Image (spheres, helix red, strand yellow):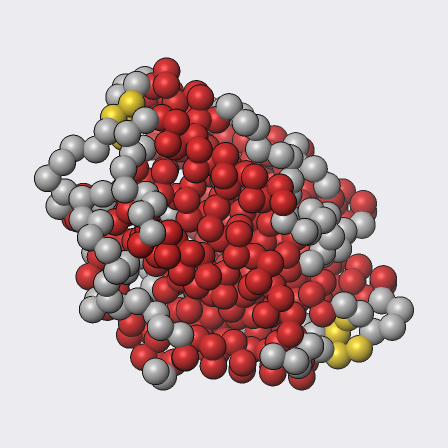
Length: 439
């Protein structure tokens, strides 16, 4: 199978499943198209609390390097400056147009809410990273208000956009794969590529906008502010990374070889498509059908994302996605084998949901990775805990709605994240061999 063939496989699988799956988050998928004749079991809201009886440990993904206190202070000062630039609340004298006034107030409130989230960050790395989105909202409100007052034009913001685009390009070009530890360097560069790529993508969204209303100018101003913040974030992390190096060396060849072998692994993989029976068993109209599908989608997605990132020259992102591919492939195979052995045939009680969640937490607790260590295994462990928290949040929302609800999507999502956590050690081991040129 060629790499283009991998892309076609993903498109045909997702096309068969329905376009709504594109970009969907596992656990939030609509399985109605499967056409079951039986209504799924529904549970009262007061039963759902027992699913969450075990707390999720307070584990966050490891920071590859911590920014300086001054860099964080500068970012927070900039955030405060932008928030303070807009009166709260705005009056009719400030912004005569009521619709515009209400929208700027809404954006300003979003900025203040994000400022609170920034203040609750557990370390300097997350404070600086979260300030990027907060500055985007604050910049949007501030620039929109300036546009209303006639102090900022579309041309002004367009000029700023071109300037910051150059900064982003310079930051991307500065990534040189130099460090003293392969995995730590890879994690750092992945974080940098992600923020810079997101900032560039938002800037590119504006190529076809041809209006110059205050709100449009403000929105573009927010995008520009986000790009500035992302460029500063990248520059600071690179600087701090370089400061801590003593025996640095280049991992460029190592990363290139590992990526080539990862792409070869994707080429050789038996990736599901529209002709694939996901399991060799009759699971029609059972929860097993949904679990198998939920396990297959991230397997297919990771292949596509690896190829896309490699095509875009984002080596670290491609490598991290390649590790996700190895994890997701193994998770899918585990799920498939267990369903074929008779697992996941019914969802009858709330205890069924609680058990698969407990199993995922137990698997995570047994993984041989230190949460604070900047390694691939620790990063994927932290990501697994994040995923459990996301599913938990969905259940809390169902509790708040206070009506009978089905939990098939949540059940399937807990099963998948548990299988993914279980697959991390083997996936990391294979990936480490590639990075070291042994596999």
